Length: 282
Image: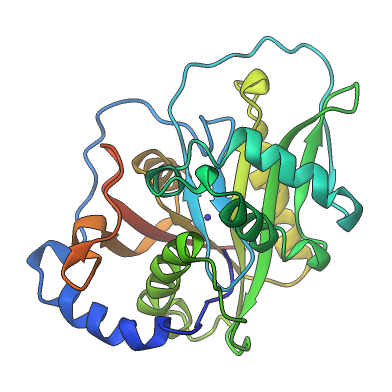
């Protein structure tokens, strides 16, 4: 995983109905995922998370693949500047959009307008100067960590009009509202949301995602932020978050998320739901 809640046209009205539908289901009670295989973090392995960022919510995804630690050179880490936005967008198209479970399920890549909307939304928070990237010795972009700062009193977002990307926005907006992080932790007024971590397939197996996550924590501490948040849309990223010692504060099964009685997302197993994790920072 978006970072600021999307409360746009048609979303708010459906949340009430969605809440009633989901709360009626006994399956809504959070359950731990069964650990059936080893895991690693985001967009492909323990070398890469992926979340989408840009509004008041976020989601993390991870694909499980075998390590490919063949690169022997030096890796450089730095803050992302707004001048690098287009390069980041191309990186997302190559390494994230085709693999993230719910994005793949609704075929975002098959609609150029949806890709454009998603890319604009994902990079919306670059101006906060809180996102990171990794480059090889030759300057090639090999990893990104898109972060955003969310505050308890953030204003509403502008409406999302794209019908395909809008489905994701509604899901994540609903999860953001229902997770009630600021209500559960009243001493917290800001969180740093890890919106997307993604690592190039050719550079996985070097612990890039873990380093990006460590540096993100450091950035949060420097800015006086006492909590980080990730919204996991895949089985693997949820397990990875647990192994990192994060606390699950909300779970939404895809089977329970419906509009007009119809399930909206049904990605391939083992991706069965969305989980929200938080971690306090010392």
